[in-house]
Length: 396
Ligand code: SF4
Image (cartoon, rainbow, N blue to C red; front, side, top):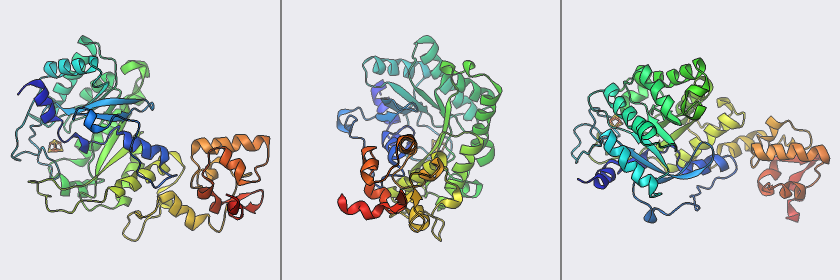
């Protein structure tokens, strides 16, 4: 196999890794405002891109093309949902660190990939595998002078010193929890140890961030951390997923969680399990952004009896229908945190309202529309100078 064929083999399933996906970034931007599942029209269509590159949005908002791949598709673990699990019959491939680093730099110079997301199957233990990822990153940074975006995966079984070294080389480090708790993980990946192998490295990252100054890390900044869950893979509820996500965001400064709706893969123990509606991913993203950026608590989430979010409406709208319909928010008096509860108003628009009302009283929907607010969305839930805004909708 030549290097390009190896790369194609190794990257074949990387769409399962959602980190930095531009489409999920758009959910973040629009999350509580729109139920649409937009696709990123601004990016190169897939047919014009190499199969292993992905349109991505970096944590600073920059849009780039990311190479997402594994160092090896050989794996000694047997996670039930995974196409790379041990014993599955397919051709395995492997890169040596130097070989991969050189190939990536060629692609980078040819402007095929601006950043890198590097993971690996586990071969000869988590710590050995982690060393190969670190070696690759060191060659890229130290020998070949790559200064672009790098997201490195922490391997289950990695040691704390290795996590620290990764943090000195990467813009982002992550480890996928896959399931929200010990019991659920046992149904997905019985040989992964939830607390010791998956949760503890995320805690280490935060401990290391707290104990060392930022200048010791790559580009003088603390790397961000993310994780991913297989949504619906272990029949867990949205409440379970969001409880763990909320805990991680509050306790170990997780930047965000990614949710990958389960779909069965042939020749795995879960091949007959029904695929999960991808809309569930979207609702989970919306809810997680409400928890992270909008001051919502878990108790505010409109969970149904089965502890899942409704699929037919976004969680912020569902909350507002129950809580604001009869108690609309006075736009001229509300505090920022109450403005953020209104469907259609995010952090930027809340700030724009606060600024505008310092100059003048906001009496009609035209004033809101001039700020870029979708008035049909907000009008059922707000008062403008004491009057229900909904009564003005006839003028629009
Ligand atoms: S350890 Fe990773 S690559 Fe290996 S089977 Fe599990 S999920 Fe797949």
